[in-house]
Image (tube, rainbow, N blue to C red; front, side, top):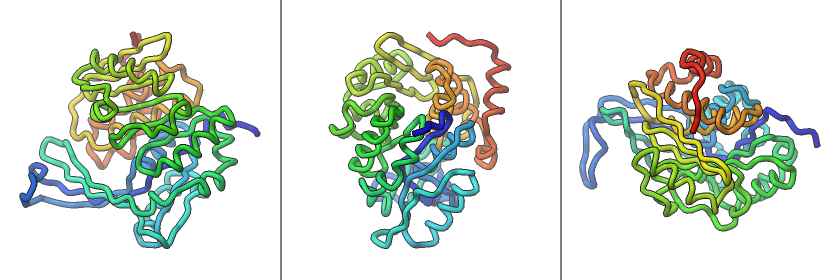
Length: 314
C-alpha cells in the first residue's frame, strides 16, 4: 500500500458547539446572566483535523453524525476546510454530538459535551476506513469516541507501520487495550493528573510527568499551559518554555497544538522542530480574537518562528 507521507487521518468527535459569554462559570445551583451566545463547529476530532489541514497536512476524517441540521453543518464545515469527508457515517440511532461552553471574562472556559452519535463508532467504521488508515503517516486519536473504535484504529495503523498519536483528552485514564499501540501521547496538566502522573504546575513538573508516562507510550508530551511544553523519549528530554503573548482566550489552544504537531510530524519534521512549531501555533491562536483564529495557517507560524530566529529545545 502506498503511503501518503503528509496525510493525517483523524478518528474522532464532531460536535456542534453553543458558546456563551458570561462573567464567570456558575457554581452549583447558581444562575448567571450572560452577555451573548454564538455557535461554532467543534469536537476535538474536528478541531484537530482542521488544525492539521491549516498547518499543511492532507487530512481525512473518520466520524459519525446524526440525521439532523447539526450534522449538515458539521459535514459542510469539514468539506469547506478541504478535509476528506468520505468516512463520516450518518446514523438514526442518536443525534449529532453537541456541547455548551461558557467563556468567562478572563477568556477561560468550561464546557459540557453530549457525545450522541460519536459514541456509536465501532470496528465497522474502522474497517470501512481501512485504506485511508493504512495509507496515512499519522493516525490521530482522542477520548471523545469509544475505546473500541480507538483500539481498532490503532491496531490497523500499526499493522501498516503508521504512527499513532493519542491526545488523551478529555481527562481519563488510557484504556488498557491501547497499551503498546500508542507511539506518541499528548496530555495537558489536567489530563496528566487524571492519569496519576501529576500535578503539573510548571515546565519542570511537566517534564517529570512526561517521564512517568513513558510506560504508556515511547514518546510522551505534557503541555503545561503558558509555562510551555515538555516531551520525553527513552533517549531525550525536550523542554520548551511558553511563548510570551497576551492571551485573549484559551479555548481551542490544545487542539491547535495537537493538530499542528501532527501536521509537522507527517511532513517529516523531527520531534523537537515539530514541538517548537506546535507551541508557536498554539501561542498565536490564543493571542488572536476569535474571529481571526480560523485564518491562522502555516505561513503565519513560520513567519513568527523566522522572526524569533533559531531556538534550541533542551
